Length: 132
Image (cartoon, rainbow, N blue to C red; front, top):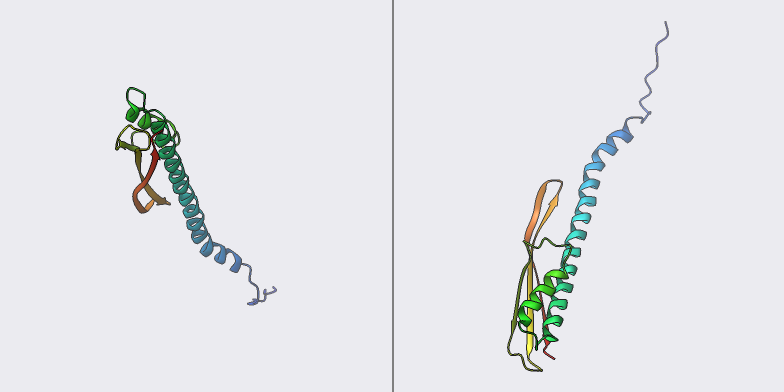
């Protein structure tokens, strides 16, 4: 009967242990990057939508209801956002050329990493255009 010699220099299991320790950290980092990317996309969409709405209001001063047109244009320019969660307000100082129209929009966010909400709040954007 031969006895196998124990060689303590072998490192066969070390790679699996290192992998098991590093993978959870790597997954958290990857999913955090994805969540921040989604948040940034929502912010860019919101900012662009307020610009579109302010521009629509600025060129619609002769329309029956330019505020409603600005709000509708803002909502239409944000297709990637949930309409029920999107808050839009539009105000104008006057409807004479050179006056300002302001469109403000808000949208809630949650940064959710692996089922844990890390941060939450409200994205805000505001655009001002001169009435033409």
